[in-house]
Structures are given as C-alpha cells and as structure tokens.
Length: 284
Image (cartoon, rainbow, N blue to C red; front, side):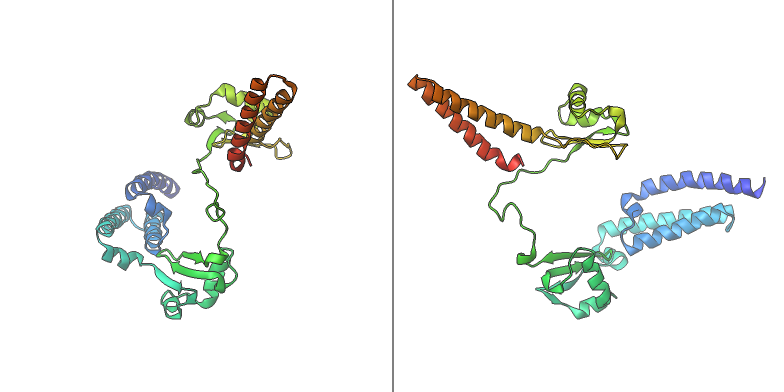
C-alpha cells in the first residue's frame, strides 16, 4: 500500500478513535482550561499525529495512545475523589489582592510579574489597582476580581427596584429555518411567528438568526446586513394601549352625567394608572 494511502487510512481510523476518547474523557478535558488538561491534550495529540504519519509504528503508537488514555482516566478518577491530588496536578487558587492591598509574595508565587497582573486587570476594563478590593488567581491562570463597593456598577437592588428573574431568549429561526422547539418552549406557534415577520416585512428564509425574549419581542438578524428592520415594539405597544385606555376612560368620565358611571370610569382609570406604574420598569 502506498505511504500516502497508509497515512490517509490510519488518520481516518485514528480520528474515529479520538472522537470516542474525547467523549469518554468528558467535556472538561476538551475545554482544557487548566495547564494539566492542556498538557495532556498536547501529548495525546502528538501521539495520535505521530502514529498517523508513521513517526511511530502502528503497534507502538496505538499502545502509547491507549496507555496515555488509561492514565488520564485513572488521573481523572483520582482527582474527582482527592482534593490533594487535584491541587497537585491542577493547582489551587491564590489570593493576589486582599482588602485593596497587592500581596507581593503571593504574586511571585504564581510566577506573574506586576506588568502581567496589570495587563490582566486591563483585560477586565480595570485600569487602577486602587479600585480592586479582592482578586484571586484561579488554577487555570484566570484572575477574578471584586471591585471596591464604590466602584461597582449600580444594580436594581441598589436603587430599591425589584427585578424579575431573567429568562433566556429562545432561538426560533436559524439559517432561514423555523425551530419549532424554541417556539414550543415559549408556547408560541408558527402562525404567531409568521404574523410577527409580516409586521416587519421579512421572510423566514432571509433570517440568519431570530430570537424571542421573555417579553415576546422578536429580534432578527438578516443575511443582508444592508437591510434595516424596525426595532421590536411589543412592550411599547402594550404601554401605548394602556395609556389609550386610560385616556378613553377619562373622556367617558368627563362626558357622562350619571354619577355612578362617572365613579366607575374614575375607578377604572385609577386602576389602569396603577398598572402602568407597576409595569413601568418592565416596559422600558
């Protein structure tokens, strides 16, 4: 068999084997966040590539790959059951800033220079060390930061505003195809989607991505970036309709001569006003 054909055949079967190995090892190893996981992946990739291009004999290559694979499984098993082994292989987090003070000894322990530390802070849009209350380097080298209380972004709780839990948007259109699963998760139908698309003059096949949020607003991104589409208006439409009802009730209240009817319209108008006030944070 020609060498080129041997490489193609071996590469094909090694690729199939790699797919099974990755599935068995799990997503954490594929992600390769820690140094240990990245190093293990590099060694495994080298063994597979070397076997494919005849750097090793087929028998030696497969034996090496299987040996390394079983060692990884054993290591994974031990890491899940022993924090000491996990700390030995993966490492543990190191506090580098505490109460606003940079801990120089801990920074040296991580092998990170002050310049490296400042660069990591800048990647998180933090340009002054004085703004940092607490910072820790995780086992994968990532630095997570807690800003000082007066430097943190304002939240609804800080303003005394109650915010409902956010619901993930559902994708209902992808590459011009309707996704019934996304519609079903929101209790919507294809007829609803068709109506919403007609409102903005868009055909399903022209949509790259279409998503519906918890409020029922449809956001679409078209294949043709030059085409401008109107912004979603479900919430604004609801607010306008409520304001229209309030105005109508006020008109009826002023026009009627019947005191009971006048009182009824007034109560209805006050209820609508209360509803509008309560919904105001969610209609923006």
